[in-house]
Picture 1: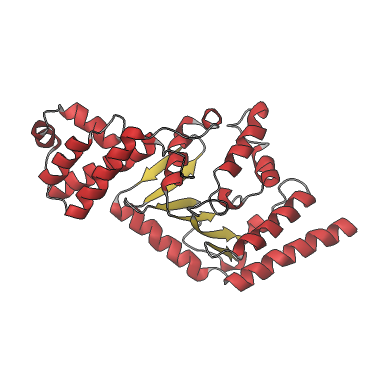
Picture 2: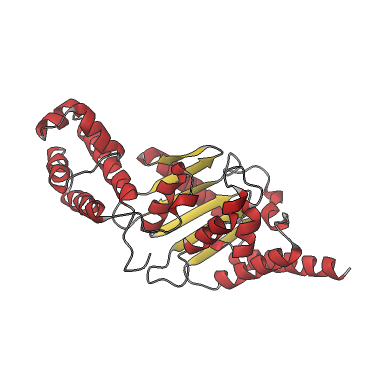
Length: 289
């Protein structure tokens, strides 16, 4: 996200609402008592906690103090509420995203660090335009007429290079993803060579987990962890018709532990680079035959 872009207000409200609910739960204050404290109905407070309505900074501060939250928590939650008042969705590609995915796009812009485990395609932050286009060609969610724009929007979201706030990106990818031919051999070679280039960056950490590993913690499905400078992290789990945004500490801790174990079982960065280079050589040899 460049300096002249504004954050997505809905993403900020989601973070504020989650923080308010977590603080209230920890303080064991009922929703009715909290609402009465600021002159709201329980229903209106519920909307605040879900991020579905604007959260005035004054009301947020009153609630956090009612919950006896630590001063630093009060500060960052109020700061997010202030920013949400001025935030708008700052992407020209908003119309191509499914409604349930727009929140993720906003949260990704705000994130400082991202971890992704994937067993299907390479992470979006690491894709080339040609690979992204090939991935979307058979999508049930994207009309054929929108594929080119959606692929470009995916590339525009990337924050690994070309930004003053590079995204710290760590990923564990199943070995089978390297062998899955997406698009033409030319597309795959370009994509794999792109991975090798990105791996030389200090903010990119990529690991391949061998198929020979057998059973491991990631097999239930792909997931993403987003960590923020000013807010607690979230886990993001996508399915065919929507996604789960998990911010309960126990959920995030579980996915964080899963990420650590996956990295521990995956190949080293050097061995990962060798695995990628071997696939490039294999595809080139196939083209010569």
